[in-house]
Image (cartoon, rainbow, N blue to C red; front, side):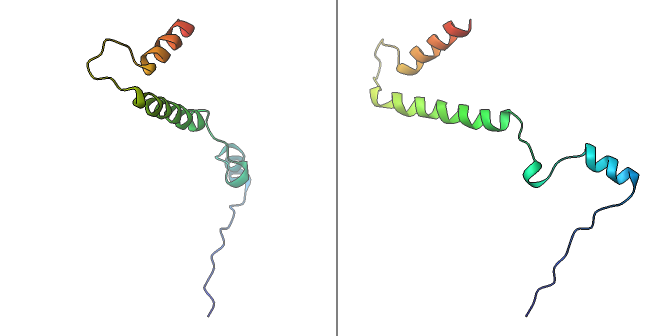
Length: 79
């Protein structure tokens, strides 16, 4: 038994061609925004830092954690 297939027809005419040229790209021509890769990478890095510093957990100690040290170094480098 065969299933019916539907093909998407492309609009014709000068207006349709102009909209297709200026519109969103589909398939292999699609491009990601810079933040579509940067935000997940940043979240992964922060979670990795949290996991790496959890083995050194000290209850009520006066020492700063590794995450605080890394944050301070980043702030020094940026500012």
